[in-house]
Length: 107
Image (cartoon, rainbow, N blue to C red; front, top):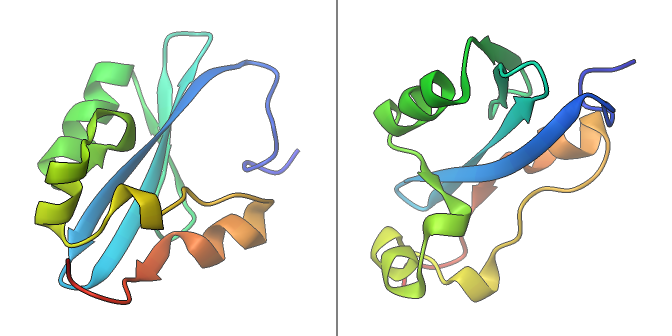
């Protein structure tokens, strides 16, 4: 099984994002049944963590925020509208190609 394929042991995935200038960078946090976590980073690598809290701390240290915790005002402060973005979708290659997105404007 390829690391991006659906894993029946996966319990929950959450998209995170960061902005650098006019670039949007995605990361996907996946919490596994075993209580561990992994992060799919912008390079398409899957990074293992011993717990979801450790993974979240690493994402926050890298200035990522959880998409589901972002409101429109926060998004606009980062240079985009929530209405104009969507988390990456697809198989491994499709995800890898969508993890770094050039924003078309600064809000």
